[in-house]
Length: 139
Length: 390
Ligand SMILES: [Zn+2]
Image (cartoon, rainbow over all chains, first blue to last red; front, side, top):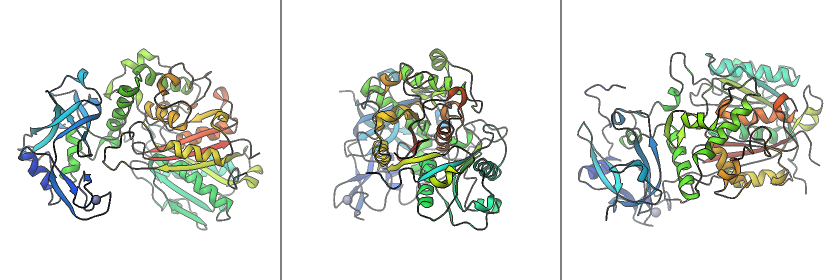
């Protein structure tokens, strides 16, 4: 599983999805929200999938949520997975009402439980990109 | 009140190619399955006037299959895609077509050839998402969401965390089905396994071991559907199509609480049984879509064989295996016999419905078959029986 030096892990975001990655580089989780009905949406859509409105804007989310479910990746399918298995796969229900597929970091796999409180964190990629991940909330 | 479609159509022909590491094209495999089914039904190729086509992950078939088959006078022809629910859907549309005079003999065919000589087994199912596409969709590959396994594994994990479902209980499904596969000469994996061998099999995505996941197979299966009247004059014992329905829903990305532990199967099964004028208690065997062990467990719950959350306890005593109270996936299923998407349960149901399952023959009065596509998103149910509507 090799990767040439100049091959980026993420293609350059399009104008449609750039706000998500710009936000990540600012340490923010930014998702789409409908100005008409208030429904939050992810991944990118042109229209609110609830009410059909096109008044849908990127807005900063709280970055907090609960763990809907989890699994433990035991095989590397991507260069990012090498030397860090097992990886905690996670579905996070952010408080705004959107379910994100992500990774849970800074946690012992045995301590991961459905319903646990989590918050967004950010990981720098070798090519300079930044992506959101989640970690347990420690109060 | 008898539903007009209850027993109006019947399966008159079944064609199955060799399955597994068979390095032939999907078109060649599909053609062979159609010719085998025509022969099995005892009809002439010129009597085949309907063709419904579905293909798997490698998209090796399209509408042009009829050209390879030299079928020039079709009254019904379409390519369909509902993922794992497609096979059950094809049977449904074929039954409605023959019952309403659109066609007399409809071939429903599935073929796929994801195994490539020299490539590892899962290559066709895990590729394609690592690079390319939009930056947002590429994130999935970085996180480790490749193919369907992670989503189903997490669904199973939620069931375990909420209801206390155990790894032994998931494992028992794999063990029971492997015991059935030992009685099926077509099955790819026939050596019996124990629970401890299940636990020792390599992890893919916890809680799934390799033995929680279906096989990958090349091959093709064709089923011919005709009217009940015509099926009675056929070469094979008719297997009547007694009831059917579908249920579909999609994850919208919103925080729907039940999406991992409840599929559209309950809606689909209850309507299919109503068409068959039957109750769940009359079902004598199940042929359930089993892309993963968990899919069997959640489908048993959704269909109402046990309460939501109690699927683990329901399966742990070997109830599904040989000698069990509810024979399920009696050919070994997708886990152990062959992975022909929804044609795996349908083909075994036809063999059982005809009483031709040999050592593994189980009570076949009422057989319920499920098809599942996506992450519990697309569902079809077909109820089959050697008995016509009473
Ligand atoms: Zn809206």
